[in-house]
Image (cartoon, rainbow over all chains, first blue to last red; front, side):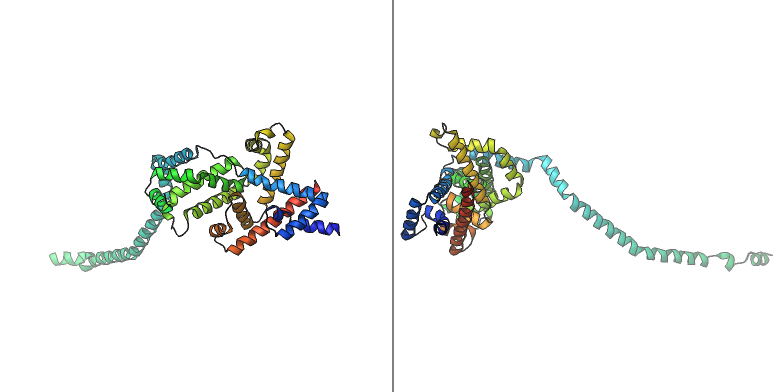
Length: 149
Length: 191
């Protein structure tokens, strides 16, 4: 029975320490703590643990925090204007430039490819013309010589 | 200076206004970060990042929330990101417990404790248990509990920062306390 009561108390200790319980519940817990050594020890341990948070809240802040912030902001501004960072930025643009050049290359290739059959036609036309002016077919040498005689 | 004037001045790159803003809020921001990180040096580093973020993104601040609410949100996010990004954090903490944590404790404890090394060790152990118990809480419970305990913020303020309802905050803090109590009791029972 006592053990059961202790378990119930253990579930409420943190709320008792934080003052979250009603006065009736507080009174019940106080009565139990005064008669139970084990629960009283656990209560002391818990209370000391929670008090650490209060101690930690009084951390002194660094008086040079603003100076450190200012320095870091200056570094950010300087870095943004440094030529080495400009080069780095250019390096970052490299993939875009490469993609652009590949696209231009493909476009030129396709354009040339589309013009290629036209060039074939031209060659055919030229050959036809050459055949057309084959004068050996038009005028036979023998015929020419006979006429002269 | 009102929040509106302060925001306007910082937007206009007024260094004096920004200095005033930092000095006015640095204790709050360091406290908030410490509540999550439990290390003074880390808390100061993150507080520095918080103010830089404020300065660089003040133009994006829509002014539909209070400046302090925005500041707390940045501090909470930066602290949680720092914990997430530094997976080594916990391991280093354990290794450094005898150096950095000792220094913090010696700095924080009153002078009359210096003559009681046992008390210092006991307090150090107690703090470690508390910190690891808080760190083990689910994310939202940890945020609500830390803002309530380390920054003394009301449930209403926490609800605004976390963008949740008042009853959600009540429930989160209640569950956080229950979980924390469970962990602390189980530890001290074994002692």
